[in-house]
Length: 408
Image 1 (cartoon, rainbow, N blue to C red):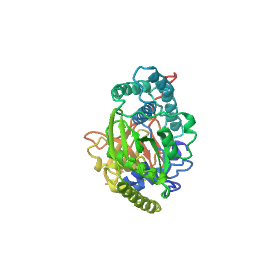
Image 2 (image 1 turned 120 degrees about the vertical axis):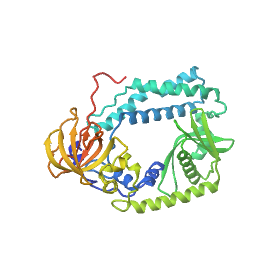
Image 3 (image 1 turned 60 degrees about the vertical axis):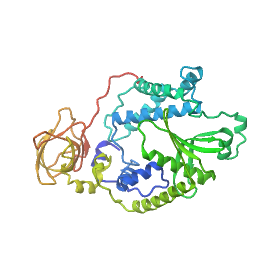
Image 4 (image 1 turned 90 degrees about the vertical axis):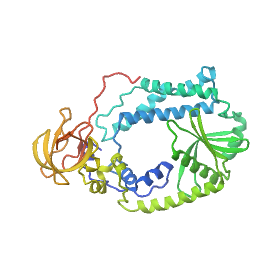
């Protein structure tokens, strides 16, 4: 869909219903706000879901986080070879940090190319920039890992001939000692996930995941869900769950009673969310978190709750406002009234390109991330701003295109 057409939409062209299969991440988003999940997952013309507006900082953070998690995972499977050894060099070469960075950047740019909200977005960081960030963060942490490799319990390596004799995932786990990137589903509930590592130690199973950054309570919740699905699928009750943040390890024993409690909670959540998502639109959970929602422009409840006047964001320089055009001054300026009846002047920065639509008196606009001028009633549309509504439904944001050259 072309950008002008997307910005002319006032809502989904086809509302999403309950998903066929849930995941831990989708359950978390639904718990925060069913309407947000529904708006993000609905169809908009030829777009299967609502596109997120890309951000260089956010995309880079996700990319580096993902690569570090994969790299720690790879080194664990390799038995944590000592830094600088031949085994370490071979494992790093097989992972191919630079090549992986190139492929992930290509994925970011490919998604942006079909995203009507990207409007000229280009990933400014090169593959070499990402390589340097990942290598620096990994090397600092891996020095500590190497010193504690024995405590981190390297994974056993078994001959392929023995592995070939396994007839089930549980038997394969017994023979091999671990399973990597294991997809798991609950046999009765429509929910699935991917376990980083399932490890067999002294005849007992441990569910592992690799994370970067600070510890989060929800990580333990996620592993408990994965342990439940493994148990119900195989009949093998895990002895514990383990989170690894580089050299830091958080581990917990688990019991069948705890997993039964998780199962009951998940069953109830799926029931409630299915019921809630059968409504179109689903109920909205309103609060300060709404300003971070990528689909809030289509949520009428959000604008009614906030008043569309920016009052709930008065401590912020950047606000969301719903306005009606009162008078057109020129292409870069016009006068509006907000929902509280206040008259506001709107000006566009000089480097903001012309709009796709026609500014029309009486047109209703929803301005996302418009800048409020200090000590005045003026609003400024910048490259950070998106404009939805009326004939103007558009984004003014166009990221500068870097000079030519390969992304190295």
